[in-house]
Amino acid sequence: MVTGDAAYIKKINRSLIISKIIEHGMISRAALAKITGLNKATISVQVADLLSEELIIETQQEHKNLGRRPIMLSINQLAGFALGIDLDQNSVSFTLCNLNGTPLESKSLELDTTDYDVIQELLIKEITFYKQKCSLEPYGLIGVVIGIHGIVNNDEMIYFVPHHQWHNKDLKSDLTNETGVNVYLENNANLCSFAEVVYKHYQSKNLLSVSLYSGIGLGIMVNGRLLKGFDGFAGEIGHMIVVPDGHPCRCGNLGCWEQYASESNFIKQLADRQNKKEITYEDIEHWLKTKDSITYKLMKDYIKFLSIGLNNMINLYNPEILVINSELLPMYPGALIEINNHLTSNVGHYRKLLISDFGKEACSHGACALAIKKFLGVSKLCLTSHEPIIQNGV
Image (cartoon, rainbow, N blue to C red):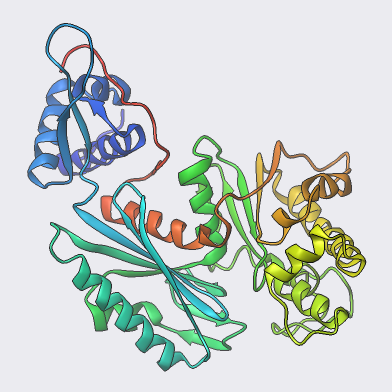
């Protein structure tokens, strides 16, 4: 028999109740008791606490049947707000979400420096702005999660960011101390994976999310948990060597996968071959639509190298779902078909390969979701909308 002190059991029950209220959007007390397996007395006490704390609200569900309309419970979505930040190579993006994970506003600022102190001051300024903006609500700004395009250890210390050449930076403490807000750091690819599970693929317990932008990162979800490794460094798949003695990488190795399959590398190569100083995604989309031979040839090579890395990951992790986060691939008709044609091994297995619907917003959405999860103290979070769940009784 599993036993525990009353406070611990109450905490577990609270977490379960909040999780189910968020998962179903609106749910009656009776349905909550049935789904959780908790008795009605426990539900009643916990719900009363959550109502008094303004974390949930009551509404009466409209329905055409005779009798009393059921009283529904839902999260008080405007009780507090989460801020997700994507600190990328040349830009920093901000997304503000309510407690249901719905984005309320977003913005992106260009970065023309890699200086730690300058970027830190920018983040302090923006976090303080959002803190003041949210100050009138019961819980205000509940937390900030920052996606780092580099290595973050299990203590949320920045170990290494290749583009910025940052080593051993305690950005979490620096920002928390200056703003008075709970700030958390996480690898950007892990946040992309978290966004996919929380918003899109809640039923999947084994999912890989590959991000292909300035570098290549891998978020690994195994048995419903992020796989982070001994130090927290797991997922730096872009630095897997695919070409021995190949192109030099900022990490110090030669022939890393991201030198051949990151979108930033593709853009550099295409600009060179088109004899242009710089190009945009709009240029690439135009050349693909007009079937420009240079662009098509380079895209074929790109997909070949991309597939090599994907094949390795499939063989390593046997995912149910493999999600590719890319701005480039949706522009290329038949991209997934070509990738699948390269993944012909009789050994590697996966159920579904798809391109993420989030695009570049995956990291900041995942960051908001993680901030909400930490604030609510829940073990699982589902921000996919559902129909209200009603059960006979109250």
